[in-house]
Length: 244
Image (tube, rainbow, N blue to C red; front, top):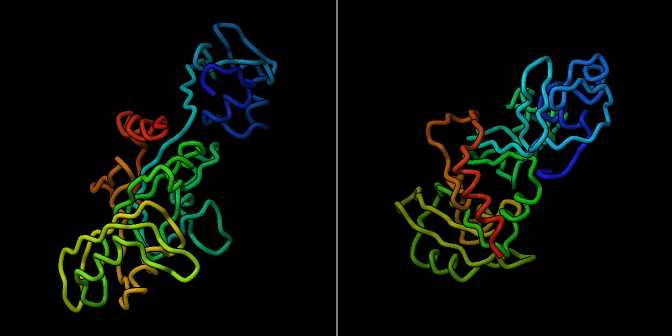
């Protein structure tokens, strides 16, 4: 959107001043100025990267996209809305209701850890496509003894019935009746890690995503807590997006 004109009511609504219907009323009342002049035409073309837009006398701070890091807790689904279940969008408590946010990829209901929430569809696609080979690192605990044969199987790619998972990395941290490990994958198929471990005759009993590409979970975030990404974190993700 940067460098392109958009309707004034759309820009004001995206900046958190209410629904498009609410914003139209605000504009028609003369509460919005563009470059120092009152504008009452709700469809007036503006460029928020160039024009000085003020609402109720305060300068509008426009963000083309929003990027949120959440430490997803167990019991919450990675969806935008659900009639029965609590979603990750529900945890934002309506603070970004003026944006069409969605989670990038999924984490199982009983999993926790890093989840990126945004309205930047292009970046989401780049992060998720296997062609980009963006690493997703998970900490897992497994019922069963992990060994070198499992490491080899992950490295070669495990057949999961209807497809063969891409080669993945299994780093065993502790092996015993309950084992722990780090798993690095480059795709995000449904229940992929659980299915890979199950194919080896074991069961995942705990799963937590630690990172996605250069973005690492902020361990100061308790489960269910979230924050917007820093400019540095956004730029790191954008560097992935611009790779050929």
